[in-house]
Length: 171
Image (cartoon, rainbow, N blue to C red; front, side, top):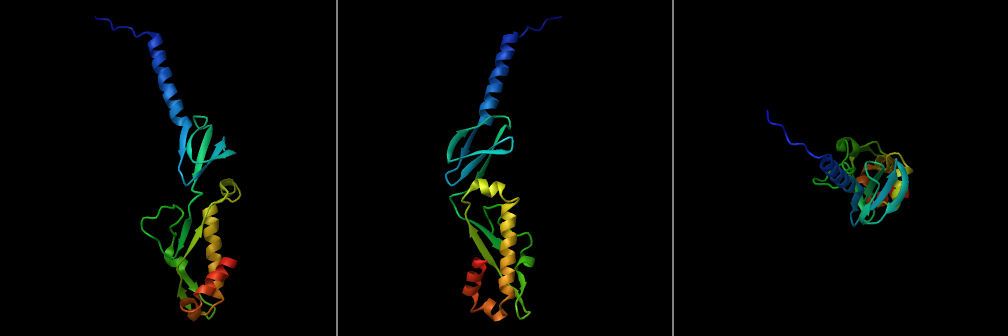
């Protein structure tokens, strides 16, 4: 019976070391896009924010990075959905229900609107509110329902749109 050649232990250790080095390098580098900022978390706790570019972190899940678009305007749509949206928080869960509102004169109105926002402080965005996008969505819908409930259907559909916008922004 022919005997298989023995592979030297040093060769196996060298290959394992190279593979380990590749994995560590792969999991320790990351890129933050030009319109974003990265929030570095160490074991889930805030460590620092980083500007766009190539960065390094501790590998194997010790450091994690959440990248947030801070230099572009985001939007939430209410009552409709634009095909091909890029913000994962943008689409409404139930656009039909969201746009159906009762006016002050007890008529029904279908209202569609957009809220535009920008993330100024990534740390506050991630840690001061449990679910910032849903909170903004809920607050915007509540404010709009309150404003629409104070108007007649004629104001909502025709002449009062600018006043509605100003009132909603004030709330």
